[in-house]
Length: 69
Image: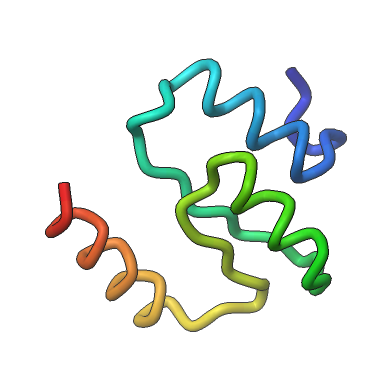
């Protein structure tokens, strides 16, 4: 699959099928749309961050998710 040409919802569906429903998925996207975020979260993304993002914030979110697993 060419991830660069995939839309976010297709990407979430594909990655959840490949890596499994229980694995954590954080979407990093330049699409700043509330509807897009909601759609991805409903499809199984665990978090959604809009680029550009603060690397420290991403690190904290990852640490939080790892602590919950």
